[in-house]
Image 1: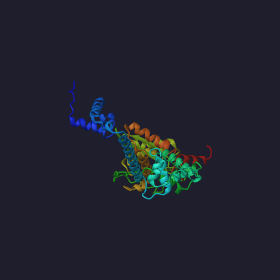
Image 2 (image 1 turned 90 degrees about the horizontal axis):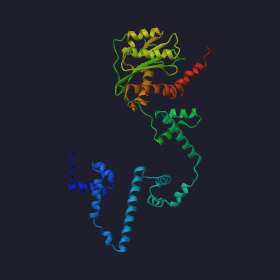
Image 3 (image 1 turned 30 degrees about the horizontal axis):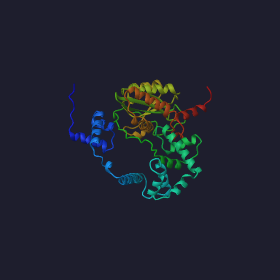
Image 4 (image 1 turned 60 degrees about the horizontal axis):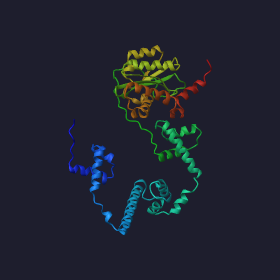
Length: 387
């Protein structure tokens, strides 16, 4: 049996003062002080019983005056609270409309008559402003704000004003890009920004493979020019590694694979997925950096098996594989940096949903004229003669 806790008179007095003078509830104070709630309640009741009651000895006139003073003190406290709030939220020099808007927003907390007096505006002017019919311009802006907020949320808080503008246009909503930009600023909608990516030194003894892309990240048709890279995703179980294959023509992630290792088989699995998902041209080129996975004999044998020609950028020059780097920057910014994956399986599932449901299917791509990679791929297929 644990010994009975003993409390000093000073501790009891401070605990009671927290409730009586500090305005903290008995339950909250008991939790904060690690006390039994009923124990603290008993201390407070004993304190109240022992406290003198001078009001009982006042005359009727003194009681009326006391109530008047209490009411004046309450009003002063309310006024100070309101004016302090207005100073925090508003600029020093306000327009009348801004003042009315602030009063309207606080009418559930303070009397309108008092607020108008404290802010130095007329009550009749406030009610006249409030009863004016909403203009068509205001209604349109509010409607646009709702649509912008929805699109921004559906983009996982990643769209800037250009993509939001493109999404509005796709649904038939007319609004200039600068208006969209201004409304997003009013709403405080700031897209997520990428974090710097640490660089891993490439193998300087890698076999010489020519650069067949030369930073020309354009293609006339899918299946001709592909790029790829490998990145890492942190989980509580350790790193999960992701290899991708992206079609230059459509910007679509046509193949990808994950593993808990960095062996060449990871890059091979991504190529296998790409070959399964799209028709590769006989002259297909796969471009990568000079990482050891991509310079290995195993990987080059795998490329030959699929009749793919290897291409590599220069050692340590990230711009030579900028398209693949750009995808990883989006992945990290829009998913990885805002997630805490308990297991590698959870990370794999999240990456799968991001690539297949969001990036390929939903996310508008600026290089494609603000359509999705799947749309770009399907538009090309629609132009081809039936087999």
